[in-house]
Image 1: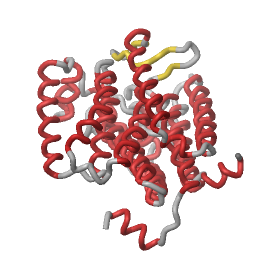
Image 2: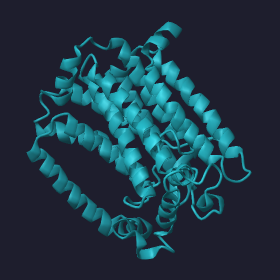
Image 3: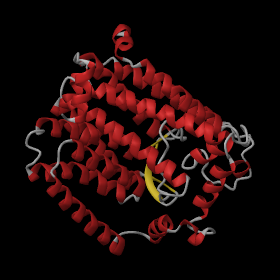
Image 4: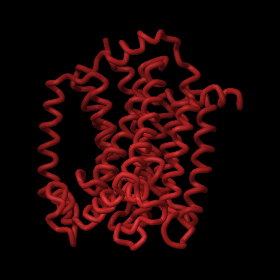
Length: 373
């Protein structure tokens, strides 16, 4: 078991994760005297790493079985339904299941389940993907959890589910004609949501996205303070514990949604560049493993979790620097919270288990396969 884990794990990827995790822990513990966040986050990191290594040693074939994926999808959907009955409401959204000592946000593991299900479905119909019926069937797999998450309401997680589905459809070879149809449907759906579904605070976030400075004392306050924090870090930063926006509580949610802004204020441009390089290395290793996958399932799964991570990074960093709406999306491996952290490490653990079936390929051929030539 230990030999299998050691063989499967990509230690370069793990090495790139360590500074990201440390950046998160140091940032959330830099201000104030409260240590509960730090202790809980360290415990979640230990649990997440344990899940990562356990999943790395499991036979990857189990994740390709239709029966396993059906049960995972039904279980994940069931948890989302339970949220409506027993969910804990916080910050206007009923998104959590409270188990006393810890809470679970079912929308997070559902993102991983969706990637697995789409990888299985699209890998079996890769040649037939030009047939529009497969687009609608795959859309059904996405739409069910999307609606349940959106109604919580958790607009951020619903948006990530949409990005996963759209991204995986694009890499699977969808035609331009069908892509145009999807965008048309998307525009109509957004218009309907705006008119009949979106709550006032959600509309305010979208308006604030177009003009963040329109209401800096109301809906734009968080973004305004975040931009100030990022800019005040300048090139070298103010130093650990000396970020005034966070220390004086001008910057809200600096342990979760706006942890990048708090980090940027302390470490400056140089620290942000190093952090993004570490994220880049993680994505590079994921894609490299995917390119050597033994079948389309492994390739699509690697691409799916790459889309998952990139969506979170782009949206979170974007909202921290004022170019994306505030959606409550966590920064992978950095933001406080156990649900997203466990999901992220589980995704990587499953990917590691697939390395045992990697095929040998010449370096030059890898480039051609990746480009689809």
